[in-house]
Amino acid sequence: MGETLVTVEELVAQSGGGTVDVTWVYEQWREKLAGMLAKINDRFELHLDESTQGLEHEGPIGSGIHGQVQCFAGPEIDWMVYSWMANPKQGFANLHITISPGPQVDLPIFGMAFACFGERPWGYIDLGARREADVNTEYFFKYYQPLNQRWLDLRRDNPQLDWFMSPSAYVRQVMSPVAFCYSGPPEQRTVDLIQGEADFMLDTWLGYFDIAEKVAPQDQPKLLKYTEDWRATVAELDPANSVAVSLFGQDITNQLVNALGGRNRTLPHAGAAWNL
Image 1 (tube, helix red, strand yellow):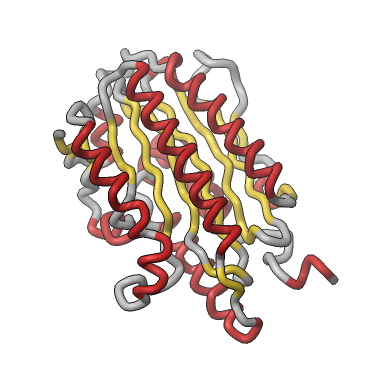
Image 2: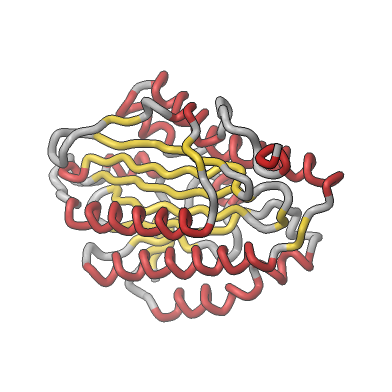
């Protein structure tokens, strides 16, 4: 198993000067993302937030960069991001789902990304802690330790993959010890492996949701604040924002970052507000 130690911006720059066509991967990413959204919609009541209307650049494949950001909220889910942007004829695709639970339940944030920065399919799938897992060992052993053996087996059994070691210390701080963060050869096996891990982790997270402890009402504001701060900070410090600036300009990038963090949301937060 190898290791990649470059920024996303450098990966884009190294993508062969825009000569790589990753449409075959991108079309599968879009289909998988839509399927995951359908599964999430089957489980939760979700409503589209008006603040993300207008964040789309439509166009057929081959017409240049296109994409969309949609964000949702509901009684159980405080904020969910569903986004995709790509220019697959030029070797670029970046698709995301991030789900922040409401403060009434105590479990991590689900996050995943499918991408191509050049010809190699790339995936990141993780659970973002909403507690200090270093000292809250009950939380750690409930949500992270059960995934450790799968993480070890995947590394041992897939020498063809390259671990993405971000040069950003902040990104490495945010990642959990069981994060999936790999790229692989441009072949169907890599795509299947990344999508399979995304399905597994989403199903695992949904199962965790069903057994999550309820948070006492007096403790919910603190957890909500932590979740909002985590979400906004990750969006603001994402090193890939520089790629968005080069594609869309600073103003649009600022709108995207605010959308990911839910800065301008119009829907109420998850919890009691939906029962009023």
